[in-house]
Image (tube, rainbow, N blue to C red; front, top):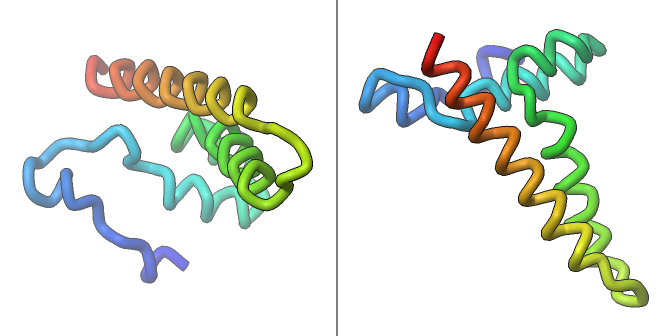
Length: 91
């Protein structure tokens, strides 16, 4: 599966990781059942999955309003991505 992964353009062009680096590998680890390693690879993986799930519900289920849940999950997900990125680049 690793041979099909896309390279990080930010890392290729500028030489340092982007905030989303590790997401593809984290998804691959999830598919292999390695949940803890997936979290360590990309700490926002579970909130990203929650956000995508809520977004799909919001777009498909028009009988309920999921707007607040989508917005709050996006804010929480963005905060986790930013915090983990700052932590990663300061090490």
